[in-house]
Amino acid sequence: MKARITIAALFFHCLLFSQEAKILESFSIPFEPVAASIDRQGFLYFASSDGVIEKYDKKGQLQYHFSPQIKATPSLLEAWQGLRVFVYYQGFQEYLFLNRFLANSERYNLNRFNISQINGIATLSADNNLWLLNTSNLTLSKIDVNSGELLLENILSLSLENKKLNPSFIREYQNLLFISDSKGYILVFDNLGNFVEEINAANNGFFSFSKNWLISSSPEQIVLTDIYSKKTKEISYANLPYQFVFMENDLLFAISGKRVDILSIN
Image (cartoon, rainbow, N blue to C red; front, side, top):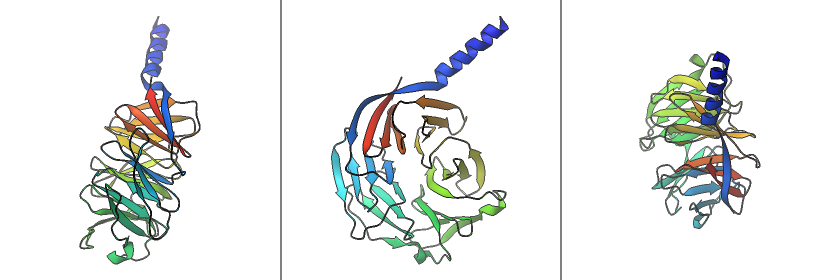
């Protein structure tokens, strides 16, 4: 009897946390994106390897197009603010802001902050400053974008116990900073740059958020991880691996090559 109860409980757990995704519709974009983002209204943003950025609605209709004067590959694209879009170019250690119509400002170089040996990734903070992870000396810094003042700096080698960090993506969300590593784990820091924990969520180097869910993907499945309880939902699909996955109103927007699939979760 006890064994039957245990089996039933395990079966219910699988029903609750293992789901299948169904493709409702798809649309195509003219290039394979190297970076992608979604804003609070559900508009999707894609960047090409030569720096073209396009904004689409949820039906796949092109809204705005940006062509840079200087061709460069964006390393990171963030549109969560809605009114402006942050674009970072790791190869040049530069960043720029676009408005919601994808009109751009001038490009800014990180060297303007008088930080030596810059080599790493950067993202926009919730208070409109910059997070910078400098891999040359493994420091995490927060910088005032207007004055260039160093607001905080943490030497990560003191807290990561000789962990070799090869960061691929960085994002602030709900007063926490998340950094993914190419080896597949995600490091979490508080809003003062202190290391909090490591999340072992299957990921391909990119992740996104919806409510309390951290959304990541592997070649076999999409994984939703609650950033507080650490409960996970594993969503299987019978399609090509997805490079980017976003969630909006219980729909998943999954990108593979030039194709964007809109998925429902059964």
